Structure formats: C-alpha cells, structure tokens
Image: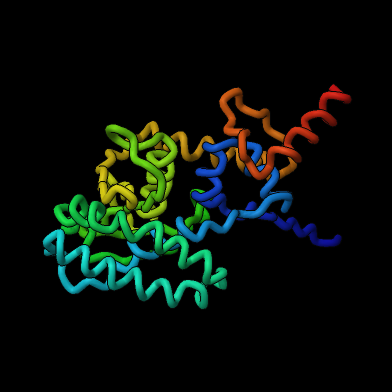
Length: 254
C-alpha cells in the first residue's frame, strides 16, 4: 500500500502593521493583499521616525531641553544627507520635510527632555515573530527595562492614546511576552511630533482583540471582501476608486 503524505500549509503570520491597517479600514487589508495599493512613502513621517530612532545612540538619558534640542538638530542635519541615499527618496522631498520639522524641534525637546529616562537605553526596530500566535512585526523601540514602545507621527489625543495605537501596542506586547516568557504589564506610545510619551496598561481584553482581528485578516487574505465600515475614512483614501468599483460590481450580483 502506498503511503499517504499530508502536507500542512501554514498561513504566514499576520503582521501587527496589518492589524493597524485593519483598524483604519478592513478593506485596506484586502486591497493591499491583492497588490492593488501600496504603502505610501511619506518623507515627513519617515524623517520624524528616523529622528526618534537616532536617540538610541545617545550615551546618556539625562538631558536638559537645550541639550536635547542641540542633539536633535544635529541628527536632523545628518538625516537630511543620509535619507535620500538610504531610502531612495527624492532629496527635494527630504529637504522640504526637514524645513517643516525644524521649527518644531524646540517644542519637541522641551516636552521630551523630562521623559528620556523612560526610553533609554534601548534597542530599536526589534523583529518579533511567533508561529504559535500567528503574528509578527517590527517593534519600534524596546525601551528601558524591556518595555515595548511604538512611535506615532500624528497628533496625540487630549488624554491617553488612540484605540488603534493601544491595540497595536498590545500585539507587540503579546509577541514580546511569548519570546521572552515574561509578563508585559504596560507599554509606551511616543507621539513624536509633540514629544509626548504616554504609558498604556496592557489588558487581557486588548490581547484578545488582537487575536480576533488576526483571524479576520486571515479570512480577508483568503479572498473574502470585508464590509466597508460606516465610519471608514474614505475621503482621500488611495483605495477609494477601486473600493467603490468593487462595491458596485458586488451590488450587481447580490
């Protein structure tokens, strides 16, 4: 008798960035998976993130606001030269982003200086992956004391953090906990443009939601077109045209 060989094809891990995309709009995950849209390159966003990463090389976490301002300005000048080469971005876009960010360095430094001890010493861009959880991602910063931290370039809410940021941070905490076999009780969200560091308690309900969204993303990647949420941010969305076309085609058959 012949031998029956069963081959199990494991789904690739869902990336935490895809969970963030899902929380913006589930259909963005669908169209990105099809290759219909690509992640946009935003020089201003990339520059601000790179500037926050550059702090990882600081020899001390003790800064006055003026010292931190000087360091950020020095790093900004360096990034102006390096980013077009590293990321293959038009140098004119990087120069424009630097001009726009320069006036904000002083206010960022004044707010951030008092929180540097929360961040340093640190590791940046830490790759995490768990076949058991079916998740992967690149954590922005493993901050002082082994605390997960993510960098956001948009505006901070009046208090706390945005829901999307809390859920994504919980996803990274899950991965870090699985890798290091330790409990991760809290994490940090860095709202870089304002120099704010917000502490976030990691709750079981948020961990569970990460896994539920993971399962929904798996279905989307199998070809299931998700419903468009009533509050979807359609205006200015790069998928707006193809999304409306797909919706119209579906309406003819259902």
